[in-house]
Length: 65
Image 1 (tube, rainbow, N blue to C red):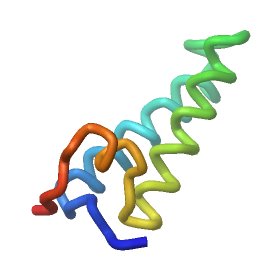
Image 2 (image 1 turned 180 degrees about the vertical axis):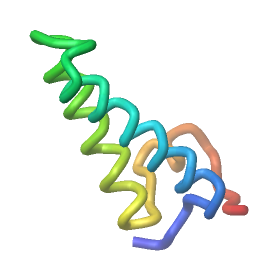
Image 3 (image 1 turned 135 degrees about the horizontal axis):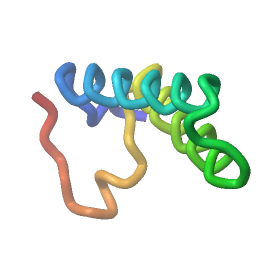
């Protein structure tokens, strides 16, 4: 897979994922919403690690910064 996520975007995704995980672990968000947010955080972390976002080609976003 060709990388399509820029450095700034990856940093923002990492910060959001960490905040979501902290919110769930701290008990601020629980139940089904907590599970959904953990899955979302996992998706964000996978795009941070790989540098690829599968939604970008679908949305027509082609440029990395």
